[in-house]
Amino acid sequence: MVHWGIISTANINRRVIPAIRASEQGDLLAVASRDAERAGAYAAHWEIPHAFGSYSSMLDSDLIHAVYISLPNHLHAEWTVKSLEAGKHVLCEKPLALPLEEVDRMIAASEASGLVLAEAFMYRHHPQMKLVGEWVHHGRLGDISLVRGVFNFTIQNRENIRLDPNAGGGSLWDIGVYPVSMAQYVMGGPPERVFGDQWIGDTGVDETFVGQLLYSQNRHAQISSSFRTPFYTLVEILGTEGTLTLNRPFVQLDDERQLIFCPATGEAQILPVPEKELYLGEIEDMNTAILDGKPPYLTLEESRNHVRTVLALYESAQRQMLVELD
Ligand SMILES: NC(=O)c1ccc[n+]([C@@H]2O[C@H](COP(=O)([O-])OP(=O)(O)OC[C@H]3O[C@@H](n4cnc5c(N)ncnc54)[C@H](OP(=O)(O)O)[C@@H]3O)[C@@H](O)[C@H]2O)c1
Image 1 (cartoon, rainbow, N blue to C red):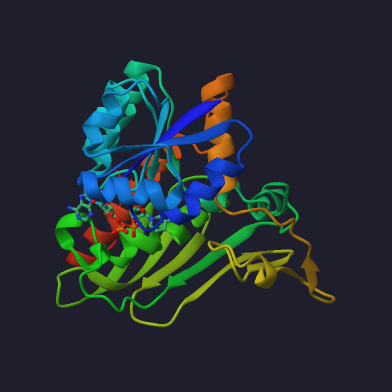
Image 2 (tube, rainbow, N blue to C red; image 1 turned 135 degrees about the horizontal axis):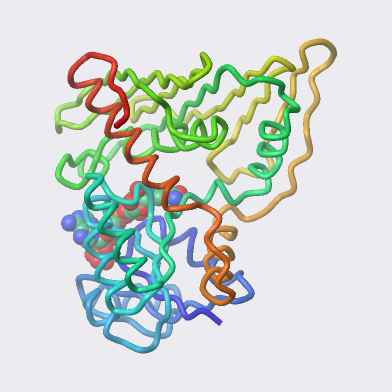
C-alpha cells in the first residue's frame, strides 16, 4: 500500500481524499497544515489518523510514502522539492510551477531522488479521455484542424487565492491551463506560436484570458478562461471527418456528461462514456508508478510544456504580439 499524506487543508482535498480511500493500493494516513489546531480539526473531521502542525514535520515522518500537494500555485515548487528531498513521492496540483526554472528544479529533484513526481491533471485519467484519444489519435476524426476549449466560473470571494498575483493567481493559470493541456494532448505537443489577450481585474490578475495557439500544418487551438461568467465549459475538436464535442471536459457531473460525434455527413451520435470518479485515476496512476515502477501516464515533459505555453500566452498578452515558444 502507498501511505499518503496531504500538504495543506485546501478546498480541493475534499475531492482527492475520497479518491485516495477508494484506490485499492492507497491509504490516507496524515494531513499537515501551517497551523496545528487546524490540522487537528481537519484530521478529526476527515477521520485522518495523523495530523501535523507543519509541512516539514510530516515530511520528517516515516509514516508516509507519498504526498499530495494542494498548496497555492506559487508554493508548488518549494514543497515539491522539499518533499522529494525528504524521500516522498509527489502528486502536485496543476500547474506544476510558475517560472520554468522552478519546473526544471522539480524535475531535477525527481530525477536525482528516483522518486515519482506527477502533475495532478485529474481529467486526463478519466475514461472519457481514453475515448477522445482513440478518436483523435487513430484517425477517426480525420485531419484535425482546430481545438476550441473554454473553462469559466464566477469568483465571488475577492480573498480567493486565484485573485492574488503573488500566489500565482489568474484565470489562465487556474482554469485556462485545462484547455491548454487538452489542445496539447490532441495536437501531440505544444504550439509553435501563440497570441493572447487578457482582461486584468483590480487585484492585478487576468480575470479573463483568450488565446490563439498556432501549430504546424495550419492547425490551431482557441482557448479561453474567465472568472467573470457563470460556470461554463466546453471542448470541440474539429477534423476533416467530423467534430467531437465534450460538454463536461474537465469536471465530474457524470450524469450530464456527453461526448458527441457529428460526422461530416449523417446524424450526430452520443458516445457512451463509462462513469468513473474523476479524481480516482490520478491516484491509481501514482500508486502504480510508486509500487510497480510504471512511469506516470502524464509525463513531466507534457507538464513542462503546459507551463511553457501559458508563459508564452501571458507574454503575448502583455506585449500584444505573436510569441514563439522557445
Ligand atoms: N485539480 C483540480 O480539480 C483543482 C481544483 C481546485 C484547485 N486546484 C489546485 O489546487 C491548489 C489549491 O487550490 P484550492 O482552491 O483548493 O486552495 P485553497 O482552498 O485556497 O487552499 C490552499 C491551502 O494552502 C495552504 N496555504 C499555505 N500557504 C498559503 C498561503 N500563503 N495562502 C493561502 N493558503 C496557503 C492553506 O492550508 P493550511 O493553512 O492548512 O496549511 C490553504 O488551505 C491550487 O494549485 C489549484 O490550482 C485543483
